[in-house]
Image (cartoon, rainbow, N blue to C red; front, side):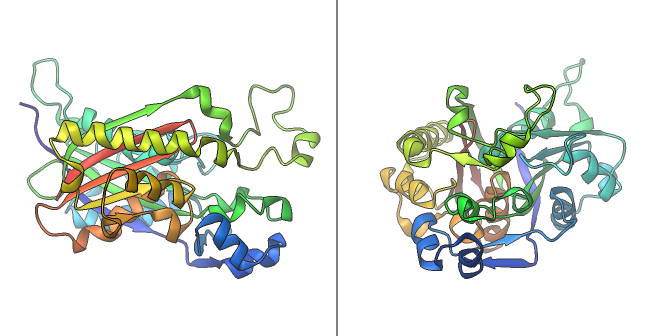
Length: 338
């Protein structure tokens, strides 16, 4: 049988700057109450100048490495889930590798947006259980560092045109050390999917390599096409349906019933849609955490940060379900037993 895969340690990091609805209202020509009513978000953290996804993840990684008693030279792979890498290329994982002083191992980014942490956990599991040619488990991937983080704030529209989207986003990062062991939450089941026919319903279109000779033109900039855009009302029922479906699938594989979920961490850019999906599953609202409602939408980082925050308070045997959906349309869920 393949070995059990666990989250051996986890950490999180948020920027110091807290951005209130009052401050955003002054920027965007709206009121704090209107922003809260429209987005369901009261505050968010935004990175300072020069603060990047990899620098936030480096802080979170130090916590995760310490919690798992893992020396950096034991890490055999770095996977970084982000939609907002430090630079166009190479990936944020390369910069994180350098900041941590990690050995010469593979370091790659994955782009699965709000389901990015779930996607990265699935990939880490696949590597950690990889068999060598002789049939034995490949020891290169005994420890995989999974990072998930974003810096959205440097790419948002701070004019009245950004009233709907800009207040929704936040920055931050979470990191987990994933591998074989006897301590830490056990990864019971993971599933994630993408429906690319919905990609342009929630996206940031420019700069675009498909456009030549310039990836972004003056006309694109004037139209605000380099800022995030979404048909949130139009895709809300689709997202609600997909979140419920993926939760049912994952707990079915785990052998759980919805009422056996002790903690549901469910994330989407619109907290009302996430809560609606949880309600449709019949899960007690007291057991539901929607990270976007209190952190802003950190996309790939939201689930990882929320899990890092809550794990120290959870007793042995607690059943935790992570679920997220976002741009792609990509959605996924992971079942963990503490």
